[in-house]
Length: 133
Ligand code: MN
Image (cartoon, rainbow, N blue to C red; front, side):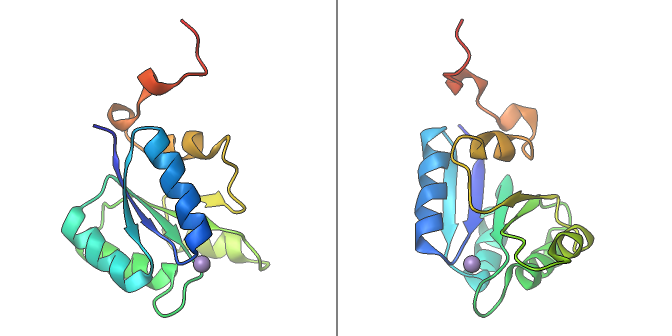
């Protein structure tokens, strides 16, 4: 089975796009529409990777990530963000994320970006239709 990926995202359109792309490539998305739900699902599901939106009402992506790391310090968490503000990039790096994917999402490169943060055993090369054999 493909990797189990928890998506924490408050924007329904972004969520739909991410869910579609992950499913199309054989991954199993787990969806959380906010930080609080994201923390609960991270603890309950122990996903292979978390894609974390930063700007969310209530518990934002920084606080959710800090809370998740308290009980699961090795959890892979990647920020998904538009870097709207000067200094955001530095803040994301210093907050201890494993990396970041920038918005607006690029559907053609999104899965490659996700794969870069997964252990090789969890990626699905057999589904890579771009490589003719
Ligand atoms: Mn958001």
